[in-house]
Length: 444
Ligand code: C2G
Image (tube, rainbow, N blue to C red; front, side, top):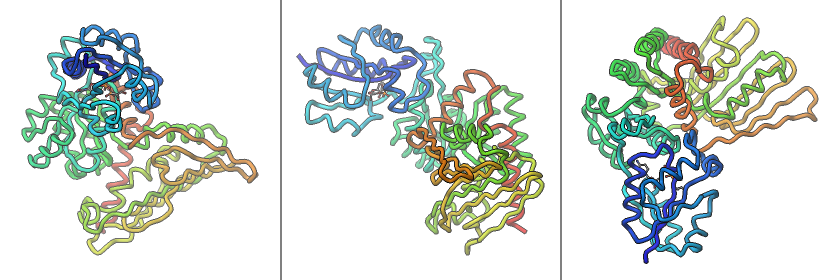
């Protein structure tokens, strides 16, 4: 008798799960299914699991493929289960290819091809709220997006669109999703889009997606003009769609905690914010060669402006930009200085100059210090006049951290428009405004 085992969360049970179990059962005579506990999912960084473990087990049982269901509660359990249940074959979907090769010493490991997309008919029949998201543009960030999205329950990456079909095809094959070169077919297949195309195309794609009735999660900077930002938000409102700028820092739990401490008054009234982020890029990279949309401020400015806008607001009295430009005319290093009625701020970023990236928030009673990479906030300190007192705070930051914004985007879709405090529309408009002023200043 061939004994097979597979594992999963099986949240919002869908045809991908059904087909996986069906083929797992067909690999042998006896199928054991391990269903994850809430705690284990939390520990391994899955966000937004909707169904209780009882419901998830019931859904697995209902398929009739499982001969036995067990609970998976910790990392490392698979190895022991394989011994304990005398397993011949371990199987899981191909999104995990290679990941479980370490089990090959104790049994056969089979990766079954994952189900590429979830059909809308099936979703309607089951009344499931699974959001099908499509990606526009498939550069570096899109490659990080797919695995992060797979860790958020209730969302499935349905496909990718790129006007250059070869590029879309390669990306689609790599991630086992559908590739589209026809934008109309792409929009027909999705409920929402993630825009990760070059900056200059964002405005047009946002409009296109909203006109097609799709919710939008757009990479930062969302747009580069204040007027455009206001316009697309107005269109989203009119069409009752969610439009969301993806600055991962804004949504991660550590940054939320840091803001909470800053707002709490422990450092008194905030008078100065200094934020710095540098990341060296290759000389021939797009970021350092595109004369209009390249350069450090457009690339990294959203990160460094974020804590400033959050803590000092958008009503600055004066803003000035100082830059070091490279031979190609793009800024290799930029410092933005803002003067407020009651304080100061500087935002520094660089793609061609390396500096210490840190966030420093100075108040009338003390200061908060977060070292690089503070934009993936996982640790910060609060210091006071009394140097012997230092309060230390840490928080998890999982993986690439995109799962937090994806999860919040999904919550906004499912629970209405109200909650945008982590990154308000006003802040996104202000960011677009600062980008616009920067671009104007750098052309003078
Ligand atoms: N699956 C699939 N097609 C999809 C979605 C999921 O074939 N469109 C497969 C997954 O590859 C997995 C199973 O269905 O084998 C369960 O998926 P999830 O519930 O998402 O669980 P997962 O996070 O993949 O956990 O210890 C748990 C395991 O590592 C798998």
